[in-house]
Image 1: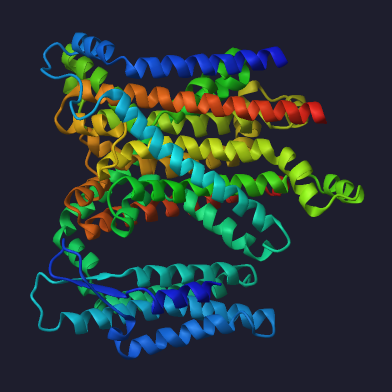
Image 2: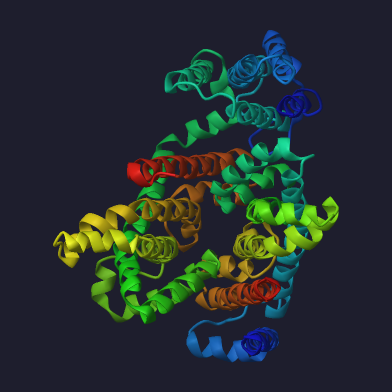
Amino acid sequence: MGALVALAGVTVLPFLELRANRLVPGVAYPMMAAGSWAYLVWLLVAVGFLSAVLPTAKVRAAASTASGYGLIAATAWAVGAATRSLLVSQQPAMRVSLGAGVWVLLAGTAILGFSGGEERAGTLLRRTVPIVLAVAAVAAAFVWGGLDRISLAREFEVRASSFWSLLGGHLAMSGSGLGLGLLFGVPLGLWATRNRGVRSVVLGVTGVIQTVPSLALLGLLIAPLAALSRAVPVLRAIGVQGIGNAPGLIALTLYALLPIVRNTYVGLSEVDPAVIDAGRGMGMSSWQLLWRVEFPLALPLIVEGVRTASVLLIGIATLTVFAGARNLGNLIFEGLGQFAPDLILLGALPVIALAVIADVALSALGRALTPEGVRA
Amino acid sequence: MKERRSIGVATVVVAALAFSWLVSAQGLWQSFLRALFPAQPVVLMPRDTLAAFVLQHLALVGISSALTIAVGIPLGIFVTRRSGREFRGLVVAATDLGQTFPPVAVLALAMPVLGFGFWPTVMALFIYGMFPVVSGAISGIESVPKAVLEAAEGMGMSPWQVLLRVELPLAARVILSGVRTSVAINIGTATVGAAIGTGGLGVPIIGGLAVQNMAYVLEGAIPAALLAVLADAALAQVEAAVTVQEAAAG
C-alpha cells in the first residue's frame, strides 16, 4: 500500500519544478534528473513492495523499515543532486522547488513506516538507530548533497534572522497562553468539582468560547480592548492595546481554558472515593488530601488537557498576527498574500512540527505521570 | 423528557430564524455600528451585503461538511469491516496525526497544491474535516459491545442488517459528536479562508483589521460567532435526539 503510493510519487507526478524566480509557476522535471540517486530510490521502493510478501514477520518489518527510512535519506540526496544539475549555469534568481511527486513519495514512505510499526516492537535502541541514521543522511545532504540549494532552503536563508525571532515569538505567544490557561483553568476545574452551579457555568461558558471561530473571537476582543486602553492609561502603559500582543494572548488563554478546566474537573471527580476515604482515615487534612492524593491521581488527565490545549494554541497563534502579533503566522499569511509557496511552507512546516512535537512530548509525559498501579 | 426535547428543538429553530432575520437587516447593522463608531466614515464593508457574506460562509461550510460526512462515515465503517480491517491501523494513525496538524497550516499548505479561491478551500476544509469524522465513526462502531453483535448474528441477521439496525443506531451518538467537532472546526477555518480569497465572514474581519476599521471587524465577527454557536446547538439537538431514541430502545 505504502509502496504503491510511493511508486505513484516517483512515476506519475513531477519530481521537481524549475522556476525562473520565486513567484512564477515552473517547468516540471521527472526524478531521472537526479541521475544515479534515482536508481537507489527505485530500488528502495522495490524493497517496500517486497516487504509485503516476504515470509516471516520479522523480515517483513526489517524490509519496510529499511525501505521507509532509506527512502527518506535517498530522496533527500536525489533532490539535492537533481537541484544541483538543474541549477548549473542558470541565473541566481532561479528556484528549484519540490514537486508533488516528492510529497507523495514521502507520504508513501510514512505509510510504509506506519504499517511496519505494529510488528516492529524491539528495544529503544533498535527503534532509534534507523531514525538517527535517516536524520544524519538528510543533514549530510544539506551540507554536501546540494539540498541546501532547493528553494525552501533559499527562502530560509533570505529570512534567517527574522525566522528565528518569529519562531521565538510563536513559542512565547503559545507558551504564555498555555501558562495563563493553566493558571486560571486548574483552579476553575477544582472549583467545579466542589460546586454544582459553578460547574455548569464554567463548563458551559468555556464550551461556548471554544465553538466561536478564533478569528471572530480575536475580532471581538480588539474593539473593546482598544476602547479600554484609551480609557485607562495605566493599561496602555503596560501594553494592553487593541492591536498587539494583548488580544492574541487573551484569545489563546480563553481557548486553553476548555480542555484544561474539563480535564481537571473530570480527573479530580474520577478519583475513587474509597481512596479519599482511606486518606481521610489516615488523618490527612483536606489540603493534604488534595495535594497528596487527588492531584497526583488526576495529573495524567490534566496533562492530557494541556496536550490538547497546546496543539490548539500552536495553530491558533498563527491568527494572532492579524491583531498585530509577530510569529510564524506572519510568514504564512505574507506567503499567501504574495502567492509565494515557499514562504507559506517556511511558516506552515515549523507550525506543524511544533504541534506534533508538543503532542508527542506531552502524551509521553502523561504516560510517565500515570502511577504504576493505575496504568491501563 | 420528550417535552424538554421539543423545547430544545423549538429554541434552535427560533434562534435560526432570528439569526437569518438579523443578518439580512442591513439597516440595523448600519445604525448599530454607526452608533458604536461615530468617527468611522464607512461602517459596513461595501464589497457585499452581510447576508451575502453569511451565504458564502454557509456554502463553504455546507458543501465541505456534506462531502466530509458522505466520505468520512463510510470510510470509518469500511475499516471496521472484515474486508477493510487491514487498513484500520493506517487510517487510525493518519487521523490521529492529522488531528494534531493545525487547520490553518493545512489550509495554507493546500493553497500551493490546490490553488486559490472557493473550490480549493472547500477541498481543504473537506480533507481536514475528515479526521474527526472518521475517528468518531471508528470509535463509535467499536464501542458497540461484542455480546450485542453476537446476539444480532444469533438472531440470523445478515451483516448488512447488523450494521444498519444494530451498529449504526448504537454508534450514532459518538459518530455525531465527531461530525459536530468537524463542523465547528470547519466554520472557524472557513473564516481564515478569506485570506485566500474565498469570501465569507472572514472577509470583513481580515479586511477590517487590515485597514484598521473596527466596524468591519465586528460586522464579520459577531455573525461568525453567532453562526458557530447556533450550528453547534443545532447539532447538539440532533445528538440528543438519537441518544433519547437509543435509551428508549434499550
